[in-house]
Length: 220
Ligand code: SF4
Image 1 (tube, rainbow, N blue to C red):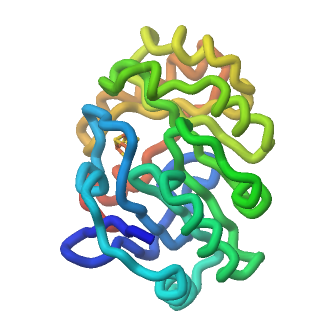
Image 2 (image 1 turned 180 degrees about the vertical axis):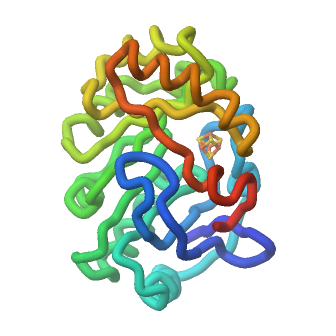
């Protein structure tokens, strides 16, 4: 499988989940290389490039050596490597809580639906600068919603983003709004407007705890 390369090493590290419904939970992070979108504010552009080719056995050994109760598979877009992901997950114990971060453009395979404990689906709104026909796939989002294991995280800039979210008809209790920010100063400035949106539309406010803790540092 192809792992994003950070400082010439494959990006596998132990940290705390910084976003979503399990924010604060300890987890190993595995960042896969390659993405089918190119968001203007992407904070992991290096993951767009070809990374390190590693066997699934090597990756499983590294994950297990970090002795974590959880695994967060992120990218890039992890579902570009579904066959490798399916194989990797057969090498890991069932008690490991597995989350997958995805942009929601590629459907999960049945084997992944069966094993993945939580999908963190983050559809990209028009302000990310992608072709909307590629970035927003209602049928794929519906397939994630039908698993009952998906949360839908939206990076938002303000109330003007709400109509595009509402049009997707996602389960309201599974929607999380997060401020658009890549560092602490941007996060502090953006949070109040997003809190107002959450109150107005009765959805959850998502923290970006890795920015609060580590600002814009990578690999943490
Ligand atoms: S989908 Fe995620 S990894 Fe891909 S460009 Fe957008 S923010 Fe970056």
